[in-house]
Length: 214
Image (tube, rainbow, N blue to C red):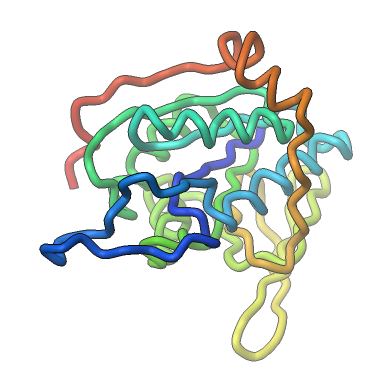
């Protein structure tokens, strides 16, 4: 089973953000960027599924500027097998991201798509749900436990009243919550491989002038 996992480049959560003088946006000058923490959890879960023998391939994908390659390298260092970069300098909202990802789902035909439940910059919590609607796939959101059994996946969801378990037919969409796992640290040799030969052989760019029309 192929697992497609989406990652996003955001300001590192340890950084105190600054607003531009004209109040138009966040100032990104010399600001440390990192993979969205919920996306780290998504990558970790995909890699664990591969280690269990459930997944045969983990494909990381990001949508963003050229600098977002850094986050794809991190995903490769953590255990992803391939990386896809949908390159755009435009601001990407939740619907635009979901539309771009839906095209990749159609092309890659993954058995499971894993996303972080939300990004810590926009904090919208929408992309996974929109992707499920666009691809007409079942969804298990806010996952604190994921168990794949044959052609089914059981997702334990964190809801206001406690926990809810849903059983979905594969392929399916899963969005990860904080208590699903604790992401590993990338080892230095793996980071170096991702920066060199492994990155060049396992990375594919999709050049886009603009995201799909809303």
